[in-house]
Amino acid sequence: MLNDLYSDQLLAAAASLPPARRLENPDATATRTSRVCGSEVSVDLIMRDDVVRDFGLEARACALGQASAGLTAANLIGSDREGLYQLRDEMQHMLDGDGEGPSDPRWAGLHALKAIRDYPQRHESTMLVFQALADCLDQLRAKS
Image (tube, rainbow, N blue to C red):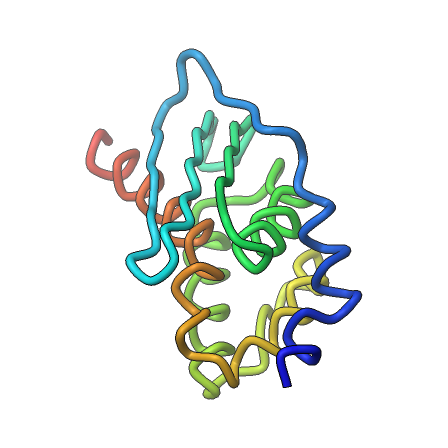
């Protein structure tokens, strides 16, 4: 059963994680840590006009945390605030079993994470990048 979870597709997604990079002067920064496995994802954002212009990402995470971070990093530049909140919500609903996953075609690769649905203990590490992004967006909203 774990072979289904750690499929070649998910392992390839984990391998797609870009090298760790942090920004010196981000508009917002956030770190999320899984209480279950200790995985940690940090995100730095630079946004202009509610659109991501640059980001830093560091994932000290399990393969699932790395997979979700890598797939997200591939399309983060150009994403807007509301779309990222929607992405977080759609991913949570997909993992909870209530949703089909991201509706925006740019995030189609994240549908590979649907296999995690049957492993609730793995949801938290998978959601770290989305929660950290939302924390950054909340910080920016509070500043404006």
